[in-house]
Length: 150
Image 1 (cartoon, rainbow, N blue to C red):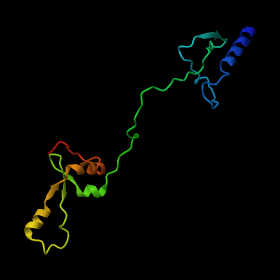
Image 2: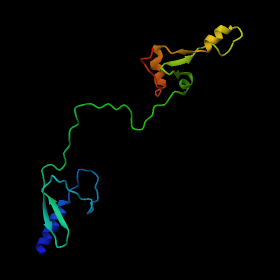
Image 3: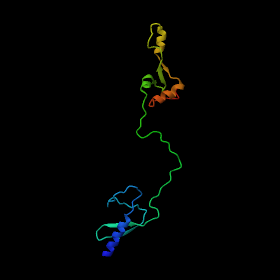
Image 4: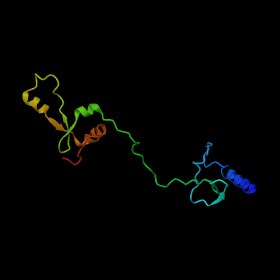
């Protein structure tokens, strides 16, 4: 009985003498030791109700898998929100059909010399040119724009 106990203790200490694939030493407790199901084990019965399993040593303890050949593109980090350009948000609107509209320049000052017809024309909203859409959408990322609207 003493020989079996000494053998079991020696096998148990030899099974846990190596560290699992990490450079920092970790403390192993009774509950944290888990063996993968693919490794064959030899079980040793002790006088108590506990059972110590020792793995049969394989030539490789750690396997490193090579990175996959396809490249990954990260568009945005998790939780990142793009910021709206607030000055642009005050100057542009979207119509019901999805067009971007703006105000005309020239109706801020010196209005006495401008006739009424001209002031009315300058008061109306004017659609943004298609060549400027990319600039406006870049400044206002959450604007719901219909690019196909004419």
